[in-house]
Amino acid sequence: MKLDMSKLVLVFCLLTAGLQAQVAVVNSASFAPGQPVTTGSWAAAFGSFSGVITTAAATMPLPNTLAGVKITIEGVDAPLSDVRQSQITFLVPCSITAGVHPIVVTTPAGASNSFTANLAQFAPGLFPSAAPYVVAQHADSSYVTPASPARPGEVIILWGTGFGPGNPAVPSGQVFSGASKLVNNVNGTIGGQPAIVDFAATLPPAERTAFAEAMHRTPRPHRLLPLPGEPHAPPHP
Image (cartoon, rainbow, N blue to C red):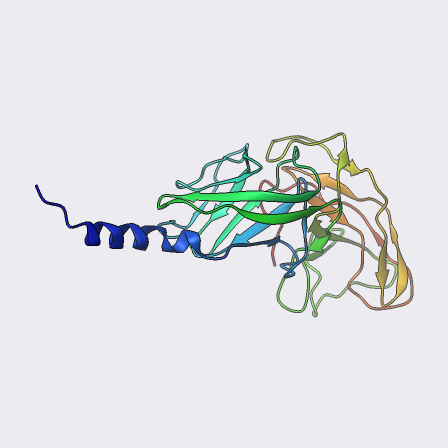
């Protein structure tokens, strides 16, 4: 049998083209270009991932392989939340320290070239709602919206990631109960004025951080409390 090598090379190039394109890794809450991600935080890889079928993880602990997709950082598998052809959402493994680290994305089309991402000790971001707002809730878990704004002195809840480690330590993607209080202090401001942070912690599964800062812009301090853990993603209005 005679093989047409030109056609084989063309097919190979088509299968791997999406994996060789530039991949950008960002904080999956802020999506800020150039912002580093942190150990144990939620991150998103943006690129062109050929052959990927949109899939969300349906089990806990979070899987390291989802619909044939895998991400490794320094050779360590990252727990995956959801995958699609343009974005993969994952948890940075807790064993990875701050610094510049190689990342490889594997899809049904094959493995990507190694690229790098910058990990920092802290890189906070708040999960977005409808622009220009972030996800915020009143103490009764109803949403803060233009029709139901936060009031001066009210306790509200915000969701974020990248605020650093908690104590006790929480393995990435694992089920746990209770709250892991952040090791480092968290400060917030409202219109340049300090807000009172009552509590900031990692909540199940990891790393849903309840961070204290009010949306209502007023110089009067606001107090905020943690929200019980969600099974997967932060709540959205």
